[in-house]
Length: 319
Ligand code: F6P
Image (cartoon, rainbow, N blue to C red; front, side, top):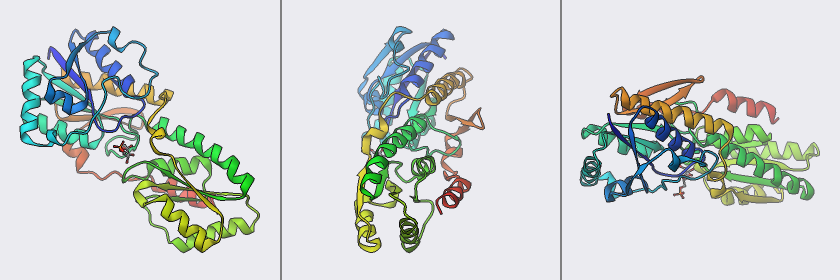
């Protein structure tokens, strides 16, 4: 292994820059050349590839977003697109690739590996929805952004004695809603992995109201449905004044937390080690604070699950 490439793909997440920095610096430390690929797989097919140096990753560890930009490419899902990508990699004499992104990005990395080009996946997504790792890069920062936003909403919720539905991201996963809900003491947490009867949600809100609670906060994962629809039903059936806040893409921005910077640095560096060891087709992760790695198939064949104990606790604490 003499030359490696690195790209970010799919939805960006805070800490991706710290991961790029770790890949570049660790590779140079081991006397490898590193090439940055801009705009994800689209940029790879288009040959948007540049040599990176120690200096090109200076002053980025604290920045949100990704200096390599990101994209979602339909064309890359085809065999033709993947062969075009490999052609570009060969043209630049690149022998291995680090892909920082979510499960969609890893599907692409798996395809390249199967076509003979070794790739390593580094899990970067705010959704925390990838099996084989306890945390993904960006989850902790996004969680803290949500907590900060809900704390602010709570002030006005109390002043006006309202119920607030806060819709958060996560695609089909409920981790962001669950962790944030537990952290802000939400009355209800609605996630795709656990179903709750609408009547029991309403009953809990009414009990709180009758006990003199000044406000109620409900965390709703986007995978459950629209916050606005849900808010309308709550207002109609529970007869409580309700407002809805959809946090949207602010959840994807901002300076990464210490947790995310450290995670990104460890995972990025480990990805380079695996390429040096000639182990393509794997994802790096962290479990119980120990670095691990699995084949892409091992990752895809296990369903990501939420921590059921945490969900149960959230119910116990919001009686
Ligand atoms: O996967 C990250 C994520 O932010 C999801 O939580 C969300 O559903 C999706 O990406 C939004 O995608 P886009 O930025 O393309 O609207």
